[in-house]
Image (cartoon, rainbow, N blue to C red; front, side, top):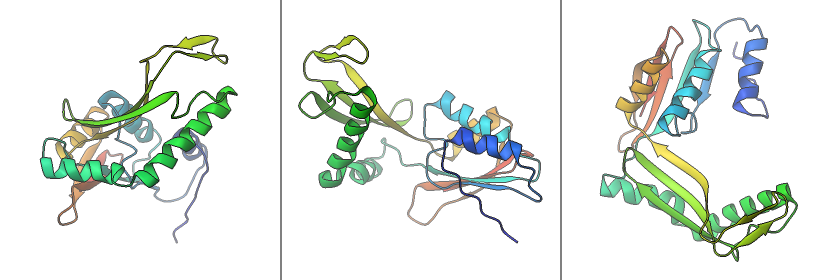
Length: 204
């Protein structure tokens, strides 16, 4: 029998749930996108460690990771196109983020008139898709009782890309071992499987 549990919450909520529940049999944790390892190196290692700490000896984890690299021009074009090919989709995505930030501070500060959106692909030390906004002018923020200066940058989100060698290195730092890697033909997306014994399978 397979039981599936879905939680609405943070990763920390999921880890707390896993620690407190005494499930019979093996737990299989699925992270099928690139979220778990998609961060600066030290942060990604901490994410892995947090999950390893709640896994039991028979549990498994299947982790996805995008292995495209900005050093390869074809892969770089594919990476860029996956986010920026459709401005009609990207624009409302960021405007929705502005709305969320404005609600949190109780003021209409974050908008296209006050801020300019930027994005770039970096290839050192690893492939990083950086997205950030820059203040077009000085803006007073009542919520923080401070001035946002013209030119001040706010990182929106970073997407980091690592290949199998790097993901194996992350895992070894927290006592996990990659035991298998899968990769669809013509794809650079990897899946990694890890048991807490501690082995990990990387799929690509």
